[in-house]
Image (cartoon, rainbow over all chains, first blue to last red; front, side):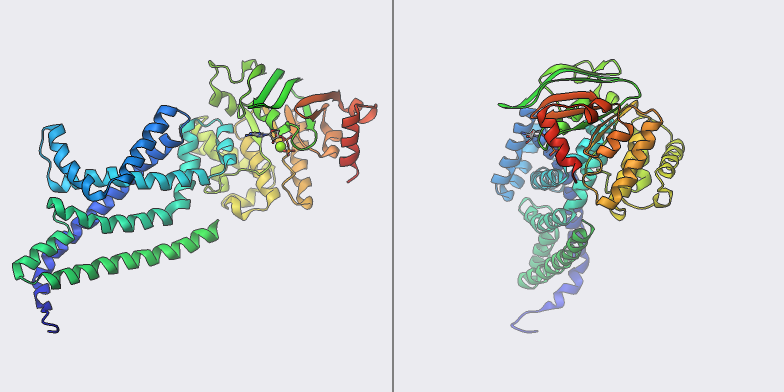
Length: 221
Length: 242
Ligand SMILES: Nc1ncnc2c1ncn2[C@@H]1O[C@H](COP(=O)(O)OP(=O)(O)OP(=O)(O)O)[C@@H](O)[C@H]1O
Ligand SMILES: [Mg+2]
């Protein structure tokens, strides 16, 4: 015990916090996969010579990037049931929101990645008789993705931290679990300190890994 | 095989190709030369539609390049192209580079594609490099793989855009040798190159371009023998002197 803090309440709440962390990680992984897929499609639309498609993608990306994430989370939570007529749980709503929101950021990364592949590579793919889809799928996107792995991972670390915002719609992530456990044991400060440490350790470890990766990518290129 | 007639191309107000016409018959080897910026790369890239053009027509094996009804990927699959900077796919091994077109475009089986790929790799003298990646090969080796890759599609003709100009001098010949052999086998070839030794050895005709115009289109003997236009003479004396 120091400063009047009592960390002994942590042990019994560990299983509960673990469930919260699992949801946070799951949300991150789903938002990352979905966000990269949707983001790549947005990037392709944005780079398309079809004006309508390109403008639509740009409006989507700009809009998402101009609205605070908290508001997007809230609005999706309120709007999806209105639009579909079915109530969706906070957890599913959060997943959809994050895919839609992160796609905007991943799309900017993938766009830079696609542009980092030289026009000569595209010409070589076309010259072999590939269709647009084949040139993109076999030649451009794999190289774009490889070049952008460190940046994509960095964005994912930010995403992992941002998932803590879902506590406002009551989705049971790590932060929400800490809030509940803190209330139950009447020890909120200890709980918040503990989850802050968890977030820090995970994010710090990941960003160190990204740094090492970045060096390797630089060597390969 | 290739008929280029009255082709014009411009970027905005800048005319890159002006009324270019020439033909390449089956089995012919044509060398295209001319000063930098004269439109050689642009001309050769219009042949397989990598560069669009505003007016004129190009027929390859009777098919109109860039016409709305033409299936361009299908046409390009039949025309081999070799680039100045090799453009092997760096994220694929040499064998993958040699088989991906055959598998994905020609729908050959993996085994068949592999057999063809390895045979061609052997032909360009690089059988031992099959498992490597492009980044592990020298420039000359990469360009030979690039030629093998183009050949893997059984092309009806081959386009070369300065295939040796990005190479160190000691590697130029290993690539030219492959090209000479190809020419002797009867491949129809259109080559942008300043290698006049190559032109002397295998070219049927030499085309000289300047500022987007084809200003000489002569048989090899005429081009090197009899007096020509002043620009071509200046250019020739410059590149032959070193
Ligand atoms: N995208 C473009 N926009 C505007 N001008 C272009 C573009 N691409 C090429 N050009 C111009 O067209 C002209 C012909 O270019 P091209 O690459 O065909 O020349 P080249 O004869 O192959 O030259 P080099 O020997 O340097 O390869 C050049 O003046 C070039 O600056
Ligand atoms: Mg050129």
